[in-house]
Length: 124
Image 1 (tube, rainbow, N blue to C red):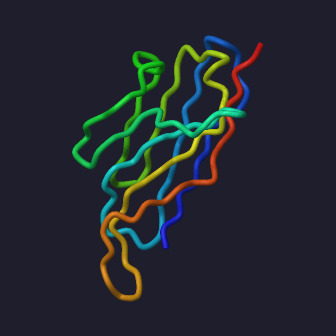
Image 2: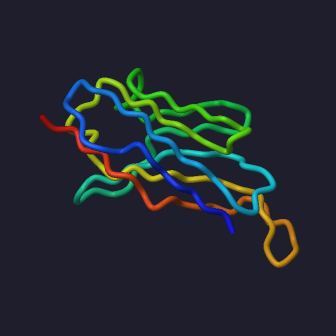
């Protein structure tokens, strides 16, 4: 099994910054892609940013220039630095990982895991 645990959410004023962290642990052979999704009240979950095993990044249009995704391969951790936060960034942020793991003594490639989420509230 693989676990993803997010941290770093909270209440911040518009224009402020937060840094989210997600630590992956468990039966990890290799972490492939990792990403951050968010889900605002009454809306569908959407991909905010992603980073591949090779370090290539993707950003949703509304966060380009404000959010930065990075990772520490040694710590199995992905980060999301969020600057110039806006009220519309308010959501529960979820970590997602594509992982090669071991199940029933066999290597399983490309298993998808989710964290439980961390709430980000941008409000004055």
